[in-house]
Length: 458
Ligand SMILES: Cc1cc2nc3c(=O)[nH]c(=O)nc-3n(C[C@H](O)[C@H](O)[C@H](O)COP(=O)(O)OP(=O)(O)OC[C@H]3O[C@@H](n4cnc5c(N)ncnc54)[C@H](O)[C@@H]3O)c2cc1C
Image (tube, rainbow, N blue to C red):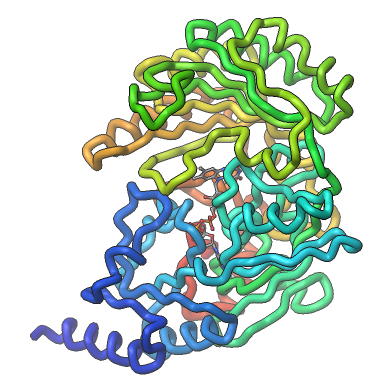
C-alpha cells in the first residue's frame, strides 16, 4: 500500500466514524448512483458523497470533512456539474442537498421559506394555491439556491429583475462549521457575498425569498419550421426593440433526432420556437404578440395559463440529461447579428441555439443588491449540445463555441453565471466590480478554501 492509499483510507475511516451511513465512499455499492449529477455528461468522482437531511447533519459533515483535511462542495441537483468539473474533486466531499427539500409560504408577507436542496417545482407547488409565484427559470427541477444565488434569469426577469434580488435571508453552514444567518440585518457582509458568491461561502440549509403576485400569466410558444428561421428571427429581433419590460421571450433554433420519445411535431425536425411570458391583461398581451402571430406560426400556444405551468413552456428535458452548453451576453442584435446567429445555428449548429431577450429590470442594479445583482446586457446567446455518447462531447462543444463566437462583435462585458457550464470559463465578467471585495470576504469567511463551488471567487 502506498502512503497516499493509507492517507485516503484514514480519511475515509474518519468520515465513516463521524458520519455513519450519511457518507458514501468510493467503493461503496451506492457510490456510482449517488455521485451522478443531473448533467449526465459529467463523470464527477468526488472523494465521498454526503447526504444530510437536516441543518445539524450539514454542520457535522462540514466539521468532519475539515477535520479530515478534505474540502466540501455543495450540490443540489447537478445542473451546473459542468462548471464544478473545473475543480479537482479527488479530495472533496460532495454534499448532496437532495434530501433537504420543501417550502412553506407566508401568503400575507408574500414570501417562501425554502430548504437548501429545494427545486423550483417545490416552491411553485406551495405558492400557487395562494395565487403566488416566483422568479424561477425555464426548468422546474433546477434548485432555488443554485439558480437564485448565482443570479437567475427568469421569464419574469425584464419586469422584476434577477432572482437573486428576491432573496431576503439565507441560513448557511460556514467554513468554521457553524450555522449562520445572513440578511440585511445580520452578517450583512456575508449576505452581500453569498448573493453571487453562492456555494463558495457555505452550505445553504434554507433561504427566504419574495414571491410574485401572479396566479396566472399570459405565456406560451410559437413554432415554425426551420425553413422560416431567418425571416422569423429578424422579425423577432426588430420586435424586441419596441417592447415594454413586461415581456420576456426567447428564440431558439432546435434540431431534434427522429426518436419516439419526442412528440411528432418535434421528432426528426428542425424548428424555430419563440416562447416566454407577457405580464399584461389578455387584450394588451395579444396586441403585443400580433406582429409575431402575423408570421403564421404552425403552433401557437400563447394563452392565459396558471403561473405554475410557466416552467413547462420552454420544454426543457424533464429527466437528467447529458449536455454541454455555453453562452455570451450581447449588447444588441442588429440584422448582421441575426444573420450570424442563423448561419451558426443551422444544420451543423448545436442541438439548441438560443437568443434570449434580457435587459429591463434584470440589467439594473437594485438598491441593497449583493455581489451579483444585475446583468448589464440586453440579450443572451446560448447553445446546448446533447451528448448521448461521450464521443460527441468534443464536436458538440465545438458547435456551441462556433455559435457564441459568431456573435463576438456584439458581446457585452457581462456574463450570466448561471449559464456558465465549463470550468475553464472566466468568471470575472460575471462578478464584475464585485470581484475584489468577494475575494477579500472569501479569505475572511473561508481562509483555508474549504468550499469548492461551481463559480470560484478567489
Ligand atoms: C435545463 C436547464 C435549464 C436552465 N434554465 C435556466 C434559466 O432559465 N435561467 C437561468 O438563469 N439559469 C438556467 N439554468 C442554469 C441553472 O440556473 C444553473 O445551472 C444553476 O446553477 C443550477 O443550480 P442547481 O443547484 O440546480 O445545480 P447544482 O449543480 O446542484 O448547483 C450549482 C452550484 O450552486 C451552488 N449550490 C447549489 N445548492 C447549494 C446549497 N444548498 N448551498 C450552497 N451552494 C449551493 C453550488 O456552488 C453548486 O456548485 C438552466 C440549466 C439547465 C440545465
